[in-house]
Image 1 (tube, one colour):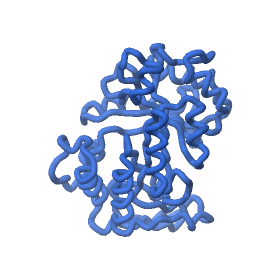
Image 2 (cartoon, rainbow, N blue to C red; image 1 turned 120 degrees about the horizontal axis):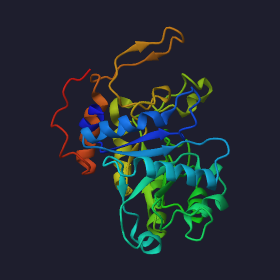
Image 3 (cartoon, rainbow, N blue to C red; image 1 turned 45 degrees about the horizontal axis):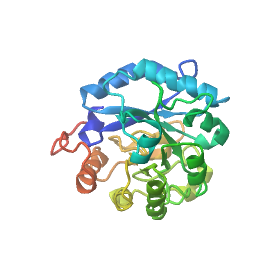
Length: 300
């Protein structure tokens, strides 16, 4: 958490499964949430939830999930909250109170009609205007998703993937037009950027989507494109998704003895991408750089 805060980042998005579920490796993520919230508060950061997909996800289960998150963590000072766009506030939140922001990964796997039951005031499981109202951010993969997400009642879109050109959403040249669309429809636009991409360790057939870090040049260009696009929020994929090669976490050279996969060192030291993140935030955005140190200490 100290590393993340020192790099100028002010919100972390954590993967989340309902308390009775676990990820593919059997880990129950909800058990860790109280510790993460406390640690974030200590380092003057906020926490947002990245809601992972699961079998049987529908309006009813999503309403249950949202209620659980708000009841369990809504009062914690480290939970990230913000206002919706102005047009959305007029439509559904007359009090203009900041609301928890939730990212819904693979949101396209849930039918539009199911989402509308949650996101429209008259929906059967609607959270609008209740104590469980939240800001819904859905995943945009294809160009058409912008219309589907709008129809579904989402408050914003994010792109997640860090490999340029892998999807319509992860292609920075499309971001300005997506910003325009979001402004017209009262949505938040959250492009996702990353330092590079290499998932050949786990998907050896996917080498065509590898993106070389180019000593930080790739990352810097993604930051610049998000700035040009006038993004409402910029998300970074990722801090520690090592298996997809998108990490900015401090690193040293390492060879996996089981797979012989080589984790390359950063050319400018273990903390290169923390330093670069801070520099780019200062250059293009204002978020949290006033609490970050002028120089990150050698922390590895």
